[in-house]
Length: 86
Image (cartoon, rainbow, N blue to C red; front, side):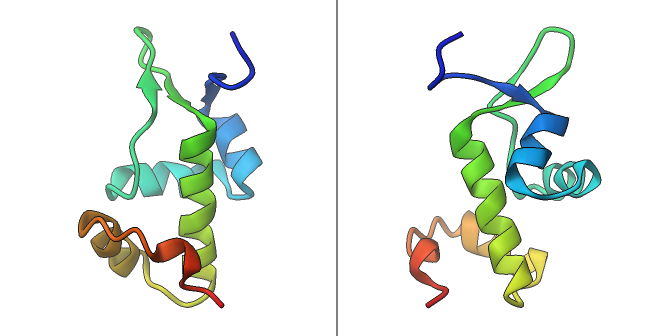
Protein backbone atom coordinates (compact mmCIF):
# COMPACT_ATOMS: atom_id res chain seq x y z
CA UNK A 1 0.00 0.00 0.00
CA UNK A 2 1.21 3.48 -0.78
CA UNK A 3 1.24 6.06 1.98
CA UNK A 4 -1.23 8.36 0.22
CA UNK A 5 -3.78 5.69 -0.58
CA UNK A 6 -3.54 3.92 2.75
CA UNK A 7 -6.87 2.67 4.07
CA UNK A 8 -7.36 2.11 7.78
CA UNK A 9 -10.08 0.21 9.66
CA UNK A 10 -12.74 1.94 11.74
CA UNK A 11 -10.83 1.79 15.05
CA UNK A 12 -7.69 3.38 13.59
CA UNK A 13 -9.73 5.99 11.71
CA UNK A 14 -11.55 6.98 14.90
CA UNK A 15 -8.27 7.22 16.81
CA UNK A 16 -6.65 9.39 14.09
CA UNK A 17 -9.70 11.68 14.07
CA UNK A 18 -9.77 11.98 17.87
CA UNK A 19 -13.18 10.41 18.44
CA UNK A 20 -14.40 7.14 19.89
CA UNK A 21 -15.10 4.13 17.72
CA UNK A 22 -18.72 4.31 18.89
CA UNK A 23 -19.01 7.92 17.73
CA UNK A 24 -17.66 6.99 14.30
CA UNK A 25 -20.10 4.09 14.08
CA UNK A 26 -22.90 6.53 14.96
CA UNK A 27 -21.75 8.98 12.26
CA UNK A 28 -21.94 6.13 9.75
CA UNK A 29 -25.35 5.01 11.00
CA UNK A 30 -26.94 8.47 10.69
CA UNK A 31 -25.47 9.10 7.24
CA UNK A 32 -22.82 11.72 8.06
CA UNK A 33 -20.24 9.80 6.07
CA UNK A 34 -19.55 6.54 4.33
CA UNK A 35 -16.47 4.35 4.42
CA UNK A 36 -13.99 4.87 1.58
CA UNK A 37 -14.16 1.17 0.84
CA UNK A 38 -15.79 -1.95 2.23
CA UNK A 39 -13.54 -5.00 2.08
CA UNK A 40 -14.98 -8.32 0.87
CA UNK A 41 -14.98 -9.36 4.54
CA UNK A 42 -17.31 -6.44 5.33
CA UNK A 43 -14.61 -4.45 7.10
CA UNK A 44 -15.11 -0.71 6.63
CA UNK A 45 -11.97 1.16 5.57
CA UNK A 46 -11.20 4.88 5.58
CA UNK A 47 -8.68 7.12 3.80
CA UNK A 48 -7.19 10.45 4.89
CA UNK A 49 -9.96 12.42 3.19
CA UNK A 50 -12.59 10.53 5.22
CA UNK A 51 -10.59 11.11 8.41
CA UNK A 52 -10.51 14.82 7.57
CA UNK A 53 -14.29 14.80 7.21
CA UNK A 54 -14.64 13.05 10.58
CA UNK A 55 -12.48 15.78 12.15
CA UNK A 56 -14.66 18.45 10.53
CA UNK A 57 -17.83 16.79 11.87
CA UNK A 58 -16.29 16.70 15.36
CA UNK A 59 -15.16 20.35 15.13
CA UNK A 60 -18.60 21.53 14.02
CA UNK A 61 -20.32 19.43 16.68
CA UNK A 62 -17.95 20.69 19.39
CA UNK A 63 -18.70 24.29 18.36
CA UNK A 64 -22.43 23.81 18.83
CA UNK A 65 -23.83 22.37 15.61
CA UNK A 66 -26.16 19.42 16.25
CA UNK A 67 -25.31 16.34 14.18
CA UNK A 68 -28.65 16.65 12.35
CA UNK A 69 -27.70 20.16 11.16
CA UNK A 70 -24.22 18.99 10.10
CA UNK A 71 -25.80 16.18 8.08
CA UNK A 72 -28.17 18.65 6.39
CA UNK A 73 -25.25 20.96 5.53
CA UNK A 74 -23.37 18.05 3.96
CA UNK A 75 -26.45 16.93 2.06
CA UNK A 76 -26.85 20.42 0.64
CA UNK A 77 -23.29 20.07 -0.64
CA UNK A 78 -22.04 23.27 0.88
CA UNK A 79 -18.35 23.76 0.39
CA UNK A 80 -18.01 26.71 2.78
CA UNK A 81 -17.97 24.59 5.93
CA UNK A 82 -14.20 24.67 6.47
CA UNK A 83 -14.18 28.43 6.94
CA UNK A 84 -17.25 28.55 9.15
CA UNK A 85 -15.41 28.58 12.48
CA UNK A 86 -13.46 31.84 12.67
